[in-house]
Image (cartoon, helix red, strand yellow):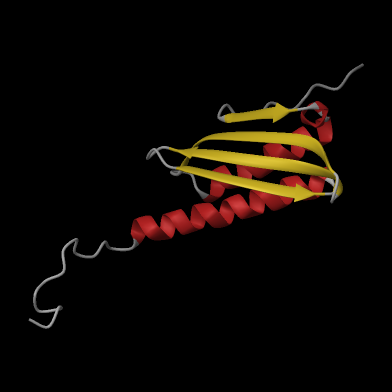
Length: 124
């Protein structure tokens, strides 16, 4: 009897070549996506993960994992990681995505300064 695939979160889309069909990688991507949702419940609207095997003359065989997080406030975070192993590429791409989302949150919290400098700050 075949095992049923774990259901993916509704806002997660996985694409790419044959690696995207691997049950272990799909499970890893789903758990990483759920982690991002728990860390940033108000930020992420949609996650797209693209995982592809590539061959480069200089570097040889590599796996490229691209995570695109489309946020509710019309911002977008795109992270690409290249690694020799597919699991490493996925975990590193999601780790970098978390860092970028934290930076965006920090920018949204910081107060915005005045748009035009006042004459007193210019020394006049």
